[in-house]
Structure formats: C-alpha cells, structure tokens
Image 1 (cartoon, one colour):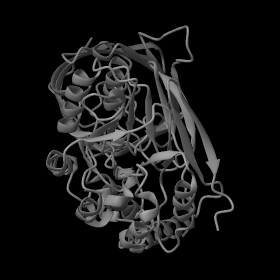
Image 2 (tube, chains in turn green, orange):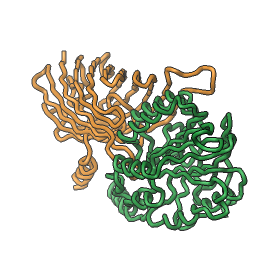
Image 3 (cartoon, each protein chain N blue to C red):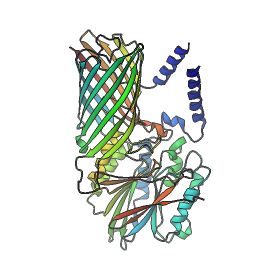
Image 4 (cartoon, each protein chain N blue to C red):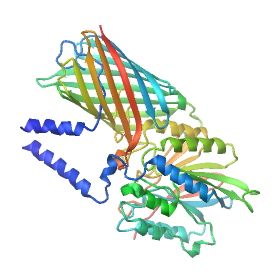
Length: 299
Length: 247
C-alpha cells in the first residue's frame, strides 16, 4: 500500500511538472530549440554581416553586469537595474549573461524594459547579450535571435580618436553555453580567435557566457555545468590565452574563484523571486575591480 | 502483482537508457559481478567521441583481486589517444544478505589530463544493493582539480568540489547466474570518470562467458549534457569491447 502511494505520488509529480508552463519538459530529452551547432552558425552569420563592434572608451571605464532576471509576470529587478544603469553617469556598457526570461512569451515584456531610450544616445551605453537555457526553451531561439542577433561574438574597446589610430584597450568574447556545451564548432572558433588575439596587445581579455564551470557548493539546485572534458579543455584554453576574467550566471548564487590564472565569477541572479538579488559593477582600467550591488528593495 | 508492477516500473525507467557492463566474475557466489573469489585480468579497447576532443581510441586494463573473503580490490588503468591517462583503485567489502548482496565501495580515481596540463582527483564512498535483476548504488564523492602550471605566488588555486552525489541504477535482462547477460544503466560515474550529479551517463552493455576462464563483453555509453536544465543535447559516446581472463 505504501509502495503504491509512493508510485502514484511520483507519477503525479511528473505529470504536474510536465503541465507547468514554465518547464519545457521535452527539453529534458532533446532541447526544443536548434542545437548549438545551428545556433552558432546563425550567430556567426549575423555577426559577420553586422561586423565587429569597436567601442570607443576612456581608458578607465565602468560597466554593469546583470544575469538571470527570469522575467515572467513581474520585472521589478530588471527595471530597477536598467534605471540604475541609466542614471549612473559613468557606465559605458552593460553585459547581460542570459536567462532574460523564464518561460515562453515573455520576450516582448523583457525587451521593452531593455530598450534604451534617447537619454542614452549621447553616451556609449549598449547592452551586450548572451542567451541562457531559459531563453531558448519552447523553441524560442529564433525569437531571441531576432531581438539580439548573435550569441557568439567578440567586440573590443579602444581609446583615441578612431579605432585605426587609437589604442586598443580590452577584448570581450561572448559564448553560447545555453545547452551546457560549447559544441565543436564554437570551441574551434574560440581557439582560433584566442590564438589570433592573445598577442594582439589587449590590456585585458574577458569572456562572458551563461553557464558556470565549477561546482564548489550545493547552491546550484539542478543547474548543470559543462561536462568534465569540456571544463578541462575550456579552462586550459582560457589560461593559455591569458584570459583574465570569466563571467557567468546560471547558478543564481555568487561565486568568485581563481583557477589557472583566470578569475571565474558567477554573478548573483536578479530575478524578482530571489530573496537577495544583486548586480555587478566593474571598473576597468589598468586593473579590474568589481563590486556586487543589492537590488533591494526590489520594488 | 505489486512486485510485477514494481519490476515493470523499474524496467520502464531503465529502458531509455543504457549501461556499464561489469567486468568481475563471481566465484562461489550466486551473484555475478561481485562476490568473486578468484583473480581476474581484463582488457578492453574503446572508440570514443566527445565534442571537445572529438575522435579518440582508449585502451583499458582491469585487475580484480579478492584479497580476503568478501573484500575485493579492483585496479584500473586507461590510456587515451587524447593524451589523457586515468587510474582508479576500488576497495569493496561485500555482505551477503538473505536477499541479494550489500556492498560498499571506496574509490579513488586520478586523471592526468596531460593535453590540458592538469589533474583531476576524485574520492568516492558509496553503498549498493545488488539483486539478480537490479543493482542500485548511492554515495558521494569529492573532487580536486589542479593546474600543473599553477602560480604559487598569486591567489590562483586548485578547485575543490567537496560534495557530489554519486548514483547508479542498473537493470539486468537475465539472472546474475546466467552465462550471458545484458544490462541498461543510468549513473553519473563509470570506470573512468565521475561526472557532476546532474550529468547522467546512459549505458547499455552485455557479456558472454565462453567458459570458466574467458569472458567477452561489449558496451556502449552516451553522455547527454544539459538534461536537467531542460536543454538536453548529445555530448559524448563510448563504444567498448573487451575480454576477461579468470585465473
């Protein structure tokens, strides 16, 4: 009788889980969006057509970093973050590390907040995006791509009158790890890019993406990392190329660690459901310093 | 009726997945795989593919040593053409029960990832219960990853992952005493790797005992990534063929 009860409870939980509109249960067996090879090809097509972005900056500048807003019915965290970003007189760009939305049909909602208004146009303010696993649930990759173009790209910053005569500052590389793997093509692209750029005279090389690499504690719930072989390969590649910083989200809990000469930072979630939502502010100059700022009170 | 229903449920859970074959052979015991009272040596060759290192061939050696009654030591070495070398030692006491067999495992697995100039050391403790048709194992492991080029003059450090859940569920098609068997399994470990708990490995394997001394085996394994954040995709596959000699 007890065993029967247990079985019925387990089956009921599975059925309820499958009916929850926030969970793309089919994705547990096979992701519903195009897989990484196709997303990478889509991203590269877009980026090659759009060209590389070179951001003109003072040599010391500030950037805001936010991740895992998981927008659904409310969006106080993201709204507050964008407000703080707009009213700060120093920031020149913002990185968003994925999981903008929680489930389906929330992109319009989220994008209306992200859309920067005319106040910003006389500054360099720009949001650089990557996608998270939630962003591509329910076959929503094409919606994400239509809005933000590419999830695998690089851009750099320079100071001076123009890019040709100015001084190169920092290189930023955005990767797509929404599925828990870089895939073969993206990894090859990254290897080639780092080989080309590692001695190109950049002050700092910064990689940002969604998925974290290490699992130091049990904060992660059911969020998965990259597989071990990929962790070995990627950490070595980043160390070898002199990458200084790897920024990610996904875990929802802050983690700052160093490995192989690279600093790995997992930024806290800024979702409304989070009891302690944070965003990160980074000062980039000769050295990189950073701080985590609370979004409380969120409303 | 209830038992049949339970068995069907276990089979249904195990069906879409596949397995690690077991190398050890039983001695004066009715459960194959564990409780073996004789030494054996096994060899296997593997074709493997993953999205990071792509195609590779692996060569595996296993030694099974029953040091005293109901206590065994397994030692394993794997050489990979991807320039990765793995060694593992397992200490396994077993306890015979009226139904099935209880076992405990203490495992240390060391991986020298020479291609990436780093090492990965895992230490695991687990307990299991093995029946004729089903084997379950649960435990925990800790991991230390260290770069061989670590700078000792900076805040650079090794990576410690103090707790990972370890699990394994294996379902057999035949009773353990049969001279052939096929099994499917889901777990986050195999003989050569310990994955994080949310990175399951699906295994399908079979073995055939030619006579008292010789056994041949064949098994395949799939590693899917992103399953538990609901974006599953293929990451790696392994196809392994081998034989054992029991002394």
